[in-house]
Amino acid sequence: MRVEFGRLVDWVEGRLPEDEARAVEEQVARADSRTLADVAWLRKFVKATDNAVLESPPREVRDALIARFEAYANGQRTPGLLKRVLASLTFESDLRPAVGLRTAGAQQARRQLVYSAGAFDVVLNLRSRVPDENLVLDGQVLPREDQELKPFSVQLLYGGTELGLTATDELGSFALRDIPPGVYDIVLSTDEEEISIAPVDLSA
Image 1 (cartoon, rainbow, N blue to C red):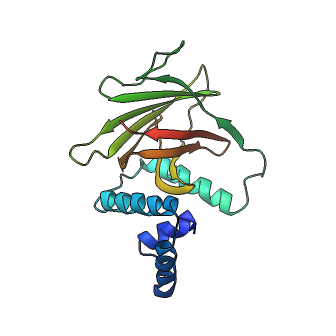
Image 2: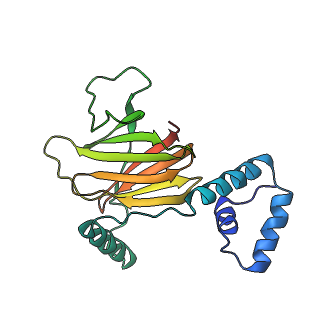
């Protein structure tokens, strides 16, 4: 039996009413190996982030995100006009560098990934923490040529469920901390553009 991932998240984090939680527990008892692997990973994630303190984005970035959400909620965004870009990997520090490499403060990172996404490059720097070996992900959005850099919201997704959310600062930098190793999707978005990086193997 396969249990829907979002429902597993609510169950592991204790957000379900008692009767629904009991039903999910019974389903998990009969679940397939993939579901059991998801449950084990979610429990590890919850334990790793239980005492984590999430950093708030700068006030101007926070205000921009609130305004963007309110515009979306009020139907001010015109459907179908969002430009979607699938980023392509152009450099990985474990492999040979690609032509036209762009870096951003990678000297102290254990691993670096650089993605090309139309008018932007996205740099990801990964470090593992001691002793739990969870990861710190520092990143930066770099505009090409005369492209204007706008604030991006940054989502970390696992199995289609959001497990992390932050925003870039005025330099295009962002950070996500206490990330258990795993394969994730990363989505960066503005009012007009969405950059998808998927799948990303986040393991230092």
